[in-house]
Length: 536
Image (cartoon, rainbow, N blue to C red; front, side, top):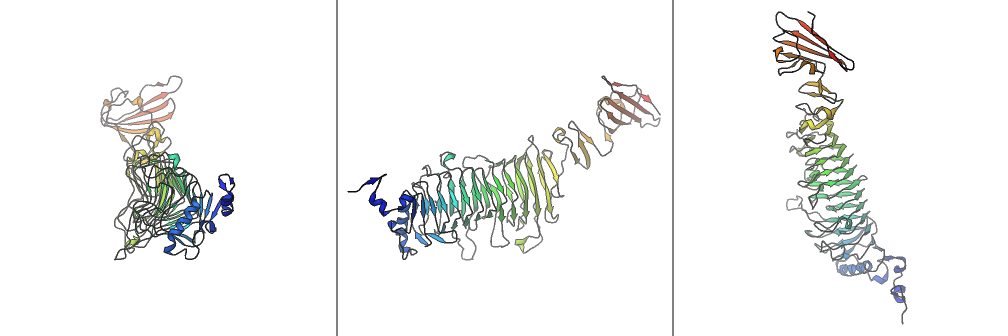
């Protein structure tokens, strides 16, 4: 007769001491994992049975060994657990089960099925040998919050056609974090995901959640359309390297059509290639209609993209600064470094450089792209645009639509743009700008022409309403009011601002009979205009 303690028999405890420590090792005889020939295909089913027995044991940590064990059906975790391999450099699992997840929650086929929080995969290298992946990711941690990978390597296959060209697919090789795609589960079932110090080769990181972070990772999207897919605000930093897929390095999407708020991409290396056989798309690309709000893309390198650096549908109250764009549009098709047609309240100031077209055998560039092509949102807060650009022979001048809603930060001719018209003076107090070749200064109420040129004044004007120091020409002085009595014909009018309540107006007749007239506004509690005085 056996005694029972906390739901376990004494016999169970003796046979499985891991229950006491909360630790399950595949080396423990209790789990009956193959020892000799564990790497052989014939051992795959036994390997799966042993590992699933560990995952079903209630242990808080499950530890694999350094045998490259083949597994051919999903490993199903049953709760919050830490799953440990033998280190990123040592293969622990080889997946041979086709288009199914190698590791997943129970009921993984149901996008509404909740997973478990705090599932941590650590020090695990898995080689995925699935020939295609149209349905499931290699590792599926969907629908469980605070879950992720540390110090792992997910090594996925790449295939070539008969002519040795890469076969590009959108297959789901890689890792899934956050909420299952198009699930109705709320965000708290998949937020605070993480991926640290890990590598995905020839695959994709799907991060469909918020408040996550990706740090110190190598995410290589070769053979795939995208290296990373992000649907919500998170942080990517810590020296992460991203090799873009054929379409993009980071693809921004949202199943509900929401813009992405508070995304931070700091110090990431978007690593293109000079290899003509490796096509790397945009560094960052958004789905149609998906924008960035309160985003920070700072201190990144965009190097040798076949496409451009950043293409997003919207950019609101965001910062794209101190990034280096080097030889983007590397195959000379005319792509811009930064493109967005809906921008307000943002700062875009970076360093741009292009040499010869590296993927056209270093030929001279023909289709010149721009450092940025921007449409400022009319009626919304101004954006700041500028940056260093090298060289004028490899870049076209920037394109800015609605330029009066943008502010130039300077840096280079290519990053400058013509305003075309005077913008709102109130939004630019204390600024000097050049419009149509003339310098102007804003006092917050109006623009002052600083060129010293004489302005034409051919509409009826009250001379006493002229408050800014300026010189005017009129073809007929009589169309204006508060003029010297009896004066007719063409005249030059000079307004001299002295101080508040003090001005002097000079009218110079341009008729043969001539005449110079002056009138003074004197200060006091009630400023008063004096009489017109003819002084010549």
